Length: 254
Image (tube, rainbow, N blue to C red):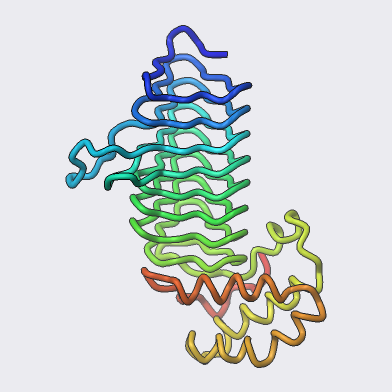
């Protein structure tokens, strides 16, 4: 269903089962997967707000079963041949802005008025609270949660909970992990990894070595080995640097 007031450009591909609400605008090269729902005023594929953009061919690629609430916006990429990519099963709430070259995984929740700068990456199952602002080129890892009103300017590792101004890592995202079906044994291993990273005063490199030495054998037995390797990969590939600020008095569970 496409509302008669919506504007759909000639290069836009809309998948079967989609609902495009009133006053939506889809322009440029956009591929919208099946069974997506766009509420009133959603804008997808607008020109990127990047002074280096010179009308080169770029696009927005969106998977299936995404919901975009009122007045959310997704801009196409900058740089010839590049894409802004959104996976499957995400809920993007009202007034969210997803800037050029962003990559959002699957099954994420991006709450009202979040602002994602250019080249931001959001891992699968991540949850962003309302009014979160994320600096360009930052990443939020798989199954991480960022609390409302937080400004993120460093990478938030997978499976952790961060919030505050300035941003602080508060503990393991235990509720999110439980909802995602992560077994208690694997969650216990991740909690120990968190303690080594943020409570041991070892420093990041030494903490990672300690996790590999002390926790990988346990993780292999308790089902958390893949999760630890996800954490290691995220740390090694960080460009902005890992958010290591934490407060001693904060609880380790949230």
